[in-house]
Length: 97
Image (cartoon, rainbow, N blue to C red; front, side, top):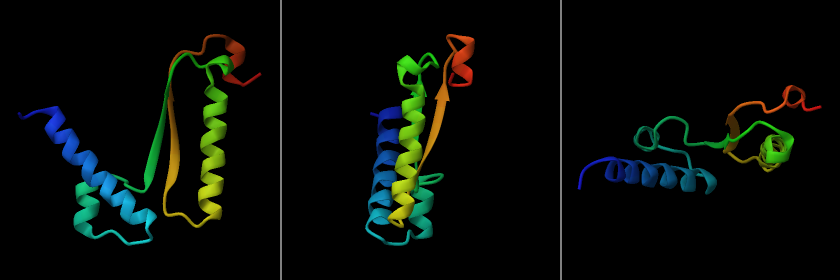
């Protein structure tokens, strides 16, 4: 079987192995970095929904901020990045009001 599942599975395995190494305090080799692709130290948190408080948009953002504060305080080599997409359901939602 060739296709996305095979290619994607191998890439996910290499990325997981790189993250396990980072979390164990080991430096990645150039080969591990290439295999993991992109930024193995970065966990991306993806939010896809209506952009509104009731759907958890601001809780998700606050959670990523808190996780990054904790990770930094612990000297962790990993961090999180929030990425979101969706429609702002009401105009007040854009400012968090």
